[in-house]
Image 1: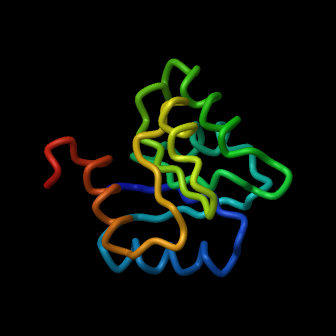
Image 2: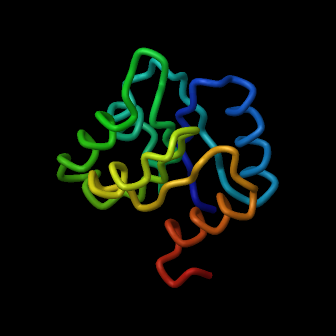
Image 3: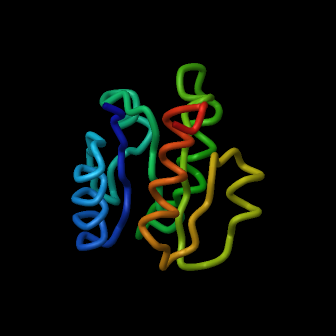
Length: 121
């Protein structure tokens, strides 16, 4: 079972994402928007990260850059999400995928399936 770390500043959205992912067989770990994302990744060792671009006082893009610069987190799939279309910026900084909110669950599940299983299965 793949473990997905979710960092989202909307508590209701975090809960919905966690329920959806758990129903689909993922182990989901939700961290607060003010958490140290790279430290949480190191501690929790997820197989993929679902990361909001705007986390209140924190930047998801900055967290992504930190993950990309780490020796153990460089290749970790990070799926970025935002209500603003910043896909190009996310991909240029190393995101595995980008989801524009609001997205349908099938888009999220496909991105995570591809992220956690390189063969797409």
